[in-house]
Image (cartoon, rainbow, N blue to C red):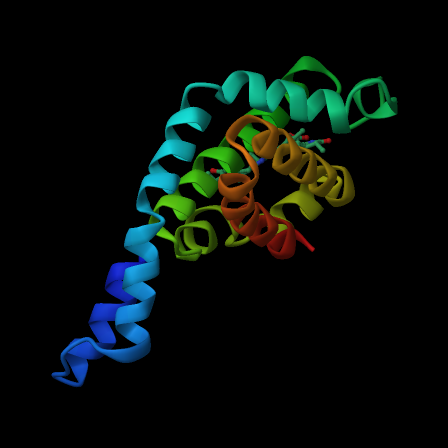
Length: 161
Ligand code: CYC
């Protein structure tokens, strides 16, 4: 896993260079947005169950997916789906705090599309659920922090597409 700080400092170290110019700007922006990231992570962490619940209601419920023959039927699959969405929210929050997508690539997206395809987990409804999560998170944490989380939830969508 990487974060913005290591992503900037490691290459500078290889050049034995002090940080300056765009590298320093990257760190400056990261530190300046630090309080926003921590506040968003705090609000998300305190509301995970209701964020997932609202996202599921917005995107997946009241259709055929939860009925016999649907991939969220029976309860075992419904629970697996809620668990997957919880993974997405938790890892997107880590990535937002690190301002780096690598934790998502390594621990969530690596082989996920293939796993879903082989199990018959439908990709399009999964993407709709992540997009609904984006809206719900923005409602909870506000536009600025929501936009920041959106980067990492969009990265999940791109990795599944
Ligand atoms: C299953 N989701 C799985 C499986 C994995 C993951 C590995 C197969 C093994 C299992 O059932 O536990 C995902 N596991 C992960 C991820 C990580 C991990 C991301 C990283 C931390 O360790 N079905 C739907 C919805 C969607 C859904 C649209 C929810 C958004 O219709 C999810 N995932 C879903 C379902 C299963 C599953 C239903 C069970 C499929 C089955 O066994 O038939």
